[in-house]
Every structure is written in structure tokens, then in C-alpha cells.
Amino acid sequence: MSYAGSNPGPFDPSDPTDPFGPPRPRRSPLRRPLTVALAALVPGALLGWLAYDALGGTGSGGTEGPGAGAGAAPSVLSSPANGSDGAGSAGGAGGDGKTGVGAGTAPAPAGSGATSLRGKVVVIDPGHNPTNYQHTADINRQVDIGTNRKECDTTGTSTNSGYSEAEFTLDVAHRLRTLLQQQGATVRLTQDGDRPFGPCVDERARIGNAAHADAVVSIHADGAGAGQRGFHVILPGAVHEGGADTRAIVGPSKDLGKLVAGDFTRATGTSPSNYVGDGTGLVTREDLGGLNLSTVPKVFIECGNMRDTKDAALLTSGAWRQKAAQGISEGIVSFLHG
Ligand code: ZN
Image (cartoon, rainbow, N blue to C red; front, side, top):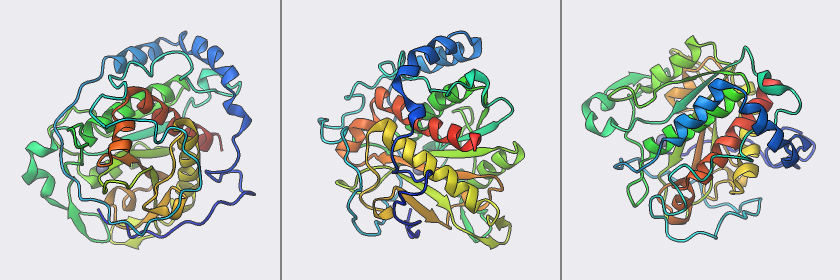
């Protein structure tokens, strides 16, 4: 992928939605034990915990072009989680998905209970598909993304040890689904490892549109160069061409993206990308079909760089993936509470 996006702007301390503003009081850890107790009373949520607790293991990798960096830029935040890890072997940082489960990981609903998102629809789009690599002809088929034609889907990238991006995205999606369902949201995944390939990027967008989603987040991890680290959230640029018209979603998607970026960096302790976004963790792009064809607020998040061993150590950790899902969930909840 190329990263030709523009920078949405620097940190604005007067903007309460700025991702790098001061922490908001609703995230008090003191509320969490109560939240966990409440969540345990919800049968669906309990099933969700058990469902993702059963996930784990590693898979074969794919390939995704390295991000053509827009120039190195200093990060604006310290990163307490960075630099404390060893080599990025798959699963090496505690990662069978079980260590992150349990007390202290449920969201704080700020007194609104487990039904605060009742009536809200969230579509989670786990990037790629674990078996795309077995269907290269299908995923290389060109589809119309409004501005031009582009391949249906790609295999995604992987860590150097073979933990695939597609497996990562599904795992985070499952954790995120559980967290949002605990808040009462209706959650739909664009794919759940339940189809041989894809869906294609145009269908991924249509699924969110057809669901009349209040928010859509596409989960990814990047395949950039070693030493390129950190997460970034991709916002839709304004495009109006062919079947693409993002003009109505640019504003709300930016709001969503800022909230997700801010909560992601706080929940995970990781820094925004040091290779795109000029340290903001935000990048705007006009070349992604999944964004161009969306008619509902939507962002992508590249949670880290699978090709950097330090980032890979985080991405392969189940405990870290739980924090990632927590951060994304908190951003979505804040957005939906408006
Ligand atoms: Zn991806």
C-alpha cells in the first residue's frame, strides 16, 4: 500500500476530541471491578468472553506491500510499552489470548450501564481473510472502488515469525465485538473466517452501508519496514467520483478516528506511527475502496507494524490485543455517545 495521505493537523489542546489531549475522567480504573461484575450478569457477554478465550495459535503469513513512508516524524507521546519487549516471536509476549482476559479489561460505561449502546449498530471489518492466500485469482480480481479499479482483497502481511495479519485482525475483532456487545450494541463482522476468501473491499463497504451502521472500524496491522513503529488510524478523504461519495462521512469519520486514536494510545501505551501521520496517528487517504464506498462513518486502524520485531512482540501478545480492542471500543463508545 502507498501512504500518500495528508496530515489532518497537529494536536489541538482546546479540542476535547483530540486524540492526544489529557485523559478523560471516565476511564477511572476504580470503576472497572464494578463493570466486570455487571458484565458477568449478561449471558451474551459471558458467552462472548468464553468464545474469544478459546481463540489462539498462529497461522501462515501473507504478503502486503510495505507502506511507502511519508518521511519519519517524531512521536508526540512517550510509549511506556515500547522498548520493554524482546524478540518478536509469535506468541512470545504472552500471547495465546488468555492473559488479557479477566478483571480490569471491561469498559467503564460511566454510569450508563450495560445498555448504553442499545439500538446502535457497529460493523467491525477484520482486514483480509486467513485463507485469502489460497485464492489468489479470486482476490486479484479487479473491483470498482468509485475512483478507479483495485484488487478485490489482498492476503495481508505477517510477522517475520509467521503470525498473519488476517489472524490478528480476526482476534482483535472478536475481542472488540465482545466489549461492544457488553455495552448493548448490535455488532456485525464483515467476515468471521467463515468464507474462503474476501469479502472484496467493495462488499466490505456495502455490508456497513446495508447495516446502516452507526460506526465501522476496519482492523489491520501494517507491513512496513523494520524500525517503523506504532499505530495509525486512516480517515476517508473527500472523494466524489463514480460510485464513491464520501463527502457526508468525512467529518464524522474524522471524529470517530480521533477518538479511536486517542483511546488506542492510552489503552495500549503505544505511540502513534513514527513513519506516517507526522506523529498524530492520523492519516487521510482517498485510495481505499473500503472507505471510498462507505456511506456511514468509517475508519481503518493499522494497529502496528508486523514487520518490526518490537511491534510484532506486541501484536502477538494476547494481553496487548485485549488492550487494543479496549482502546478501539472506548473510542467507538465515545463517538456513539456523541
Ligand atoms: Zn491490512
